[in-house]
Length: 251
Ligand code: FPP
Image (cartoon, rainbow, N blue to C red; front, side):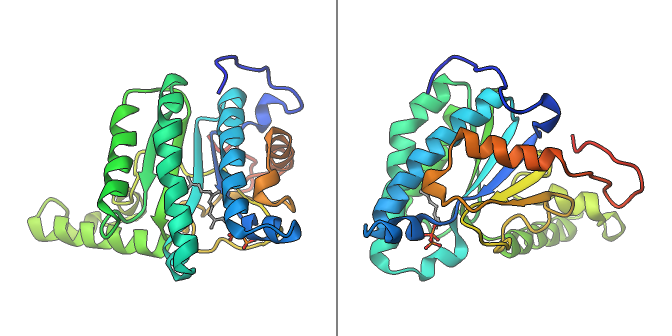
């Protein structure tokens, strides 16, 4: 990752949202189209991730959330799960120092319980090492499902109610938000999904209430800065009213 901050090129600063979330889809199809094993698609997907993190920092995006492993992904064949876990291990071991040097703060959302102990430790290490950084916040949604996150929030709220630190009448939209996995982060302004699929697949269901959705045909391993800028240009053309009549900016 380079230290240099490239100027915003094709896109205007008004098109740079505060929080971009990405559903990185199409690794398997990218590989199949080339007669390669799916694992090769995932490996190239990690390279696309590195490019995208760099581009997001250069463009001045505050928060980048990536869907790296969903609760539902456990139903994939054991060999593919092993490969994905191996890639996460390698991503954290090899890229963490680089992310830290580039002032990236890593946050993890998702269920920690039941993860292999070394993976759970790596996730904590990534968060601890980068805690004080104030550049790009990279939120890795790992072992993540939005309904499961809402169930966790409900359990935390039930505990707070039982302990008396929360009262029944205080339970409103804002309070629920405070019990989610990363309560301090802004909602995503835009969610980008690659590979042509057009659905949220249990990703950030609460936080996406007013997010713009941008679907691009590119398979994730081919995603790069130009593809990100293209998606942000499409976002920049949307008029966001948040249920009202007047256009507003998201941040
Ligand atoms: C979707 O492609 C992608 C995933 C299930 C995982 C995304 C993972 C990476 C980009 C690499 C791993 C990165 C980390 C940090 C662990 P798909 O396999 O669903 O593709 P398909 O729909 O074409 O089969």
